[in-house]
Image (cartoon, rainbow, N blue to C red):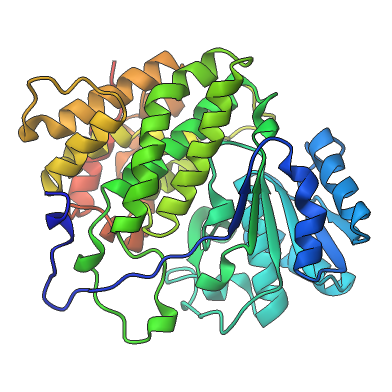
Length: 434
Ligand SMILES: [Fe+2]
């Protein structure tokens, strides 16, 4: 069945292209940043980070390493969680004014995605909105490379250091959208698990569910053979559906999430668990960066668009704020109950990788088995109980659906087709689970 998932389809793709940055992983590797930058022939870099990390030990380590390699550094730290298009344009102007020849980003997905967007505008001009698909822009393609980018993630969730996408809040529409281009892939990813040593439990939980959903959506995504073959091979997006390469990282990342997520949340001194989660986030990033996500991410954007008065423990963001990983996982059990019909074997396998008990289950049970395992993991890590746990009720379902149906490519990457009514039903079934 595993191979049959990629059986040829008439008019469908018969090939796939994959990519990942030059990846360095291990405790202490932030101190290699200077050498990596020097190898890319960088002389003057912009260090992108946020205000919380700016004066902390991780940024200090990176600055010291760059200094040792005689690389000049200018800092851009005016980046909030979930950056918007204005942030990108400000950052791009900063790069142009500072005459830098590359970027080192140190932070979570917000920092890394800001760097990608700013590098794009620095190299090719225009407004960042033009590079998004309708209804935001006109799908302007990046015509060529951008300046070198070394990405150093500081949470075990985003995977952005390994992807060619940038997720940006578009101020005018007050919602997040995805820009994708092979040229947005960082040149180097430096992943140092020590970054997660001091993360509070709730941040490990929410970013952990982001990594889990990246892997799960990747493994259950529509097969690449069901997407149309492209006419220009050089323009082939890496968001191309599940494929044999993305399966590799997704399987292992699911196994890690199933074994170590609860441990990493429960005990901040469990270094083995937290190191494994960082590796899992990296693998999941490589995996979904070459396949794309689907409905849980698409439907999370309605939540972060319409969230009302709400804050999350351990995050310093003002209300309204729901962490990305939580916005993704709260609907996931309901969604996988729905999508299992389109790829039951894959859903059952994914449940098994997540250490679910599949004894006696048939393929008809795949969605339920997977959903119950997700709910078990959510409850044991104190994740909010579905939509109602993040401030939404049945009266919000129409608005949530109207917002999320705009994420057309991610919706089309699901293994089962869905229309607005189906999405409303998925939101309704996600209001509460226990
Ligand atoms: Fe995500």
